[in-house]
Each structure stands twice: as C-alpha cells, then as structure tokens.
Image (tube, rainbow, N blue to C red; front, side, top):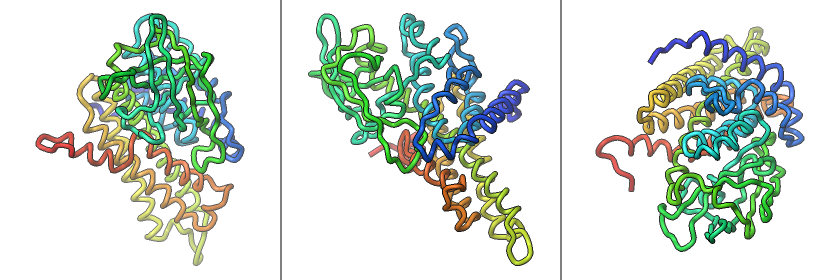
Length: 383
C-alpha cells in the first residue's frame, strides 16, 4: 500500500472539502434545528459525481477507487454527519450493491438515475427489532406466477421518506433460516407502499428517517436481486458497505471535533493565557489527533484491500471499531474543551456529540465489531 495520496486524490479531497465548507456547512445549524433534509445539496453532490462515486462510468458513475471514496465521505461528514449518513450509508450503499449483484437490465434502469441524483435509494437493513441480524426479517414475500406479494413494516429507514427505490429484504414464505431470504428492488410508487417520517429526533436531525410499510404490495418478479436465496449474502455485502461508510464518516466527524477544539482553545483565555497552553487541553487534543490519524490509515488499508479484491473483514471490523470509538471520544473532548458553551445550540460541537452517538450504531454496535475482530482470527469462534 502506498501511504501517499495520488495527485488526483489530493485534488478530489480539495474539491470535496471546498464543497463541504462553502455549500454544506453554512446550512447545518438551520437544517438540524428544522429537521430539514437538504435535497438541493444532494443534487449538487450528484453533479460532482459523489453519489455514484464507485459506480462504473458506463452507468454514469465516477468509477473511483475505494480510498478516493473514503476521502469524499470523510470530507462530507466533516461538515455534516447527517448528510454523509444519508448519502453514503443509504443511497450510495444501495448503488454499490446494484453494481455487484444487479443484472444488466437492473443496472441500466437504476444506476444512471442514482448517479445523477434523479432518484434516491434506501434499504431496510437495520430494522428496529432485528438490528443487523439479517436472518430475523419482518417483511414477508409470497410468490405467484406474475409477481411477489410483500407485506411488512420497518420503523427505521434512512431516506425512507424521500427515496424512490428501496432495497428490501424479505423472508420468502414457507422457507426458514438464512437461505429463505430474498432481496428486492422496490419502487416507492407501487400500490401498497407507504412511508411516514420520524420527527423529533435527537440525532441526525437533517437526515430523513422514516417508517416504511408494505401492505399487499405487488412487486414485479424482475425486481428480485440476484437469485432467490441470495438475500443473506447480499445483506452481508450491504452491511460491509455500510460499515466502511460509517467508519469513514466517523473519521470526518472526529476531524471536525479536532478543528473546533483547537479553534476554541486558541481563542479562549483563562488566567491570562490561551487555554491551548494548558497541558490537559493539549492532552485531549492529542488523544483526538492520534485516534483520528490511526483510524484514517485503517480505513485506507480497507480501501486498498477492496481495490485489490482481497479479504478485508477483520481489517474492516478493526477500522469500524476504532473510528467509532475515536469519534465518540473526540465529541466528548470537544465538549470538555468548550466547557458550558459547548452545550449551546449555536456551538457545532453539541451537534457533533448528538450525531456521533447515533451514527456509530449503524451497521452494529462497538462491541459487535470488537468481537468480530477477534472472531476473524484463527482459533477463535463465535458463541
């Protein structure tokens, strides 16, 4: 692995950072306060090629490598974790699944529209009662000669109220266990499909999170993704994609905490000098920097392995665990550095603290990934 970014990656990072700083960051406080999902920002991201970052160019994507993808995610999350989660942990994750598992007809139908931001995607992996246990699915699908009849409800879908395409996992009727799960591409305009936005959220208030319900929804047979028993494998692929995006997003959030902490510490004075001169403040900043730099390198390592199509499960678990833990600590340290002012709504660090607390749960809890890192080692087995 080359530890130096290429000239193209540096240019991409600068472009993403400039966009995030000038377009996303000025809107974050108002969007958080009003629980507004900024579709106009997502549209602008599509024009820059961010929505289809890893989608091949033949389907109107950017065809970027996974390290470049991580760079984009980090810079967007640095300005708004809510926007990053909505775009990369939901929409772009579904697009990536389509690239690998979709047939040519499905790719041609959906990927160009998703890359251009003309339609948004979401998925049902992460139901409130099942979490990341893809074998415990609430949706049920029954087949007839012409279509699938799908029923079920899930109360927590990122982009669920604004998406046009839902990657839905359902248990095939009369089948039990993981082999009985199917993955379906469901258009939101189908009869029987409905959604209800969740309001009054504590975290990620600028993300659209909704309850999705299907009642006797008639899904065309060609909407099945992969083979009839591929659902569990597709769910695991999607889960890996989500965790990669969450980890990169956490690095961006941690960097935002570092930036805010240093800026405030240089401006705030106590006992006749800047608090940035105090050893305890420097120690907290050092903890944030060390954790963030380490997590960033681990994400790049996973990206490098993905680029080479080599196994990356253990490295992803390690990166996801450390990036999430670092983000949680960084948000707490940023609050401590700001003192009482860090709890005010006009301070960005209180939003970092709230958003990180929820974002780190997507794709599994910290303990889940810590255990996965151990269980990926020879001689260690899950209970």
